Length: 180
Ligand SMILES: Cc1cc2nc3c(=O)[nH]c(=O)nc-3n(C[C@H](O)[C@H](O)[C@H](O)COP(=O)(O)OP(=O)(O)OC[C@H]3O[C@@H](n4cnc5c(N)ncnc54)[C@H](O)[C@@H]3O)c2cc1C
Image (tube, rainbow, N blue to C red; front, top):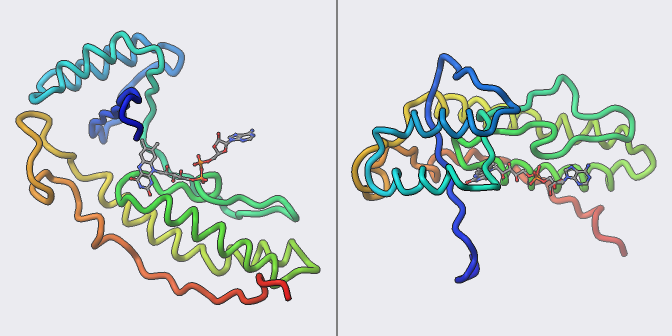
């Protein structure tokens, strides 16, 4: 981040029951967040004060996208649009980038039939994307770091060890991508 750029912060809370909030009511969403952060220590009260005045506040629940199919003819979904993983594992960008790589490779492999390339892409990646989503669900449903006190050392803050959540994926060598 640039030295003089404004800091951006996101706060979250676990709510298995599903908080009731109005999508169009930003002030209500801010109040809900402030209530849930009321017990927060460290700089949380300061952040909540800034949040109340922020004009770029955004509030939403963590979500996954699970589609029955990732393509229809030549229209293909990649990344979050087709298989958003959610935050639990820190792997969503990797899955999206692998998706782009595999889609490019399969389209090049099926150069004369893009729809078949799109189906081959899904066959290649779906299992990996679903396993990442299942892992994320497992971690999203666990309680987050304690909201009070000082930030702690890595590993003792209740966050998962993101490195250990990296799932293996065999990258095909799409040499067809290289034009002579
Ligand atoms: C708060 C937060 C924290 C995250 N932390 C992590 C993390 O630590 N690690 C991780 O791996 N992932 C993380 N993610 C998830 C990660 O950001 C996404 O999985 C990833 O960006 C998906 O890439 P994408 O290209 O599919 O979608 P996006 O990055 O959302 O890109 C879609 C693009 O399409 C553009 N667009 C939308 N509609 C239109 C339109 N009609 N016409 C033209 N353009 C359009 C958008 O402006 C955007 O630039 C986080 C996400 C959030 C919200």
